[in-house]
Length: 367
Image (cartoon, rainbow, N blue to C red; front, top):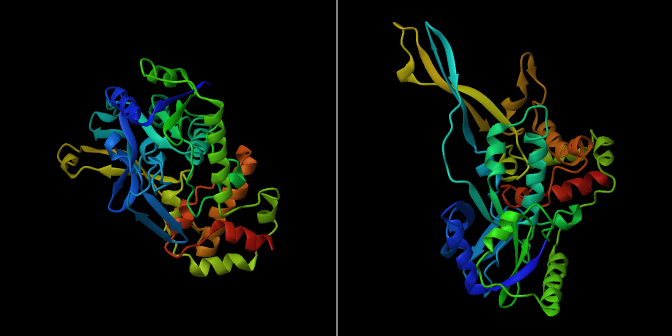
């Protein structure tokens, strides 16, 4: 990896270079929320500040002098690499038999702009699920393989972040093509791949001084000091396994709405369901033809029907569903993949309507 710097007003040149070959996806303000969507340089919410609390999100105007003065919104990469609704294949049944075709669309590869360390850590966990399991997800594989990641070192954590406790942030260490660190009058650029190096070809880049490296390190340490929430991981997963009947599970279930917001905004939740969608225009009694497609859509373990199988439902209560979700994040993942399924982004705390805090719930069970 090499590290160089550019003047702040030269960042636009990187965007201009990328947009001919990539679909740019990054942060933009919509309806007073910073979302991830198709964007260009002028869409960056420069100077905006976001307030995060338990069930609280507020965005304030662009009064800060820094370009990347904001933290995370509800969106993450998973909406683009594993879309909320995706056609798996189209099928047709007729007198001649059954045929199935996998649809393919020629689209530009995606360049993810401004991805933070916690989301890059979540992306590695997604790879374990979709690429390293018994069945390789070819749709996810093609989208991920062709994508470009331009990361941003987080200097302004929100009030619900606890990435430092899990070693998933705030500093970006790997998994990127180009990483940006904002200092007073420049952007420091760290290349993490050959694609990242190619982006800088022909740009006016300068050497980084020791003073600027010290500023980068100092800003990272200041970020860590401002992180308010923490989580202990040294006794996981056993602290959860030892307490399946802890009264806290009943307590949190009395507050939980089972709305599934936490699973929708979580960058590592991957539960989905598949179903057949028939086309009314493709059903003919005379020819006995039926056509439609197989669709995969996001689902949630908080949904009552998600655990419904032949013979009944093995997680009928909110208590059982919340316990399963938290146990999966902080216990099952560790045994299966060697690390928790939580990256400390805090989205589940911010976007929970009743402000349930996973760090508080774990500590209550531990005590």
